[in-house]
Length: 234
Image (cartoon, rainbow, N blue to C red; front, side, top):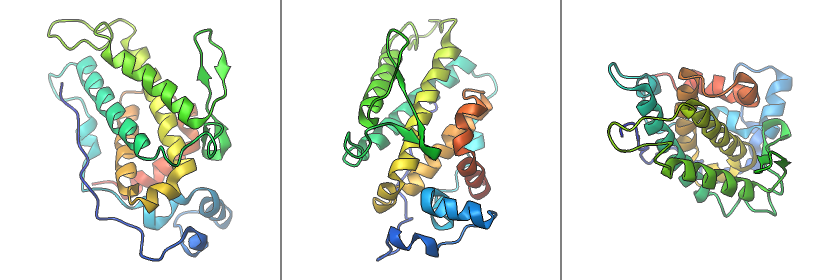
């Protein structure tokens, strides 16, 4: 299946000697004083020097729109697999920073807590690495299920396919939101922020194109989404 896009290495990096203790020295555009102060202290991913970084001049809109004559379910399936692989790999690269000690709960922007829902439908508060393990294992099982993600020509997708894709995208969004909120400083130190920005921009663009995420679910990240769109238009 097509649609599995690779992201090349980046030339963007933190300036030598730069520390996050100097974070207030950066300036943000298009934010009032109160919003900027909040962003500088709690949302370093909105800083001008970092939010503008991406891997290449990619037109994510072209990568997202369904090609003429291409089956929509097949298109969504290929992208779901690709996004899972990229986000799982990115999360794994930061696993040494995301532990039960550093992240006893799974938090997103604004200290929103993400819960895992067990087999009985009960919401369970768990550490971020455990939540990630639950979600990635769940997604991997779905992707490996031929009745859900068929790989043989002529085999149909199930009637509830769209619902399952929406659930997968919600879990992947929670993973990305946690990485931005809790580990962006680690991402920058590893010089991976251009990669994360590009991946998140493509992911959100695809989600919006096919209405895979509810606005209420993404509201805590709308400031980043809006700013990334401003900087990452080709």
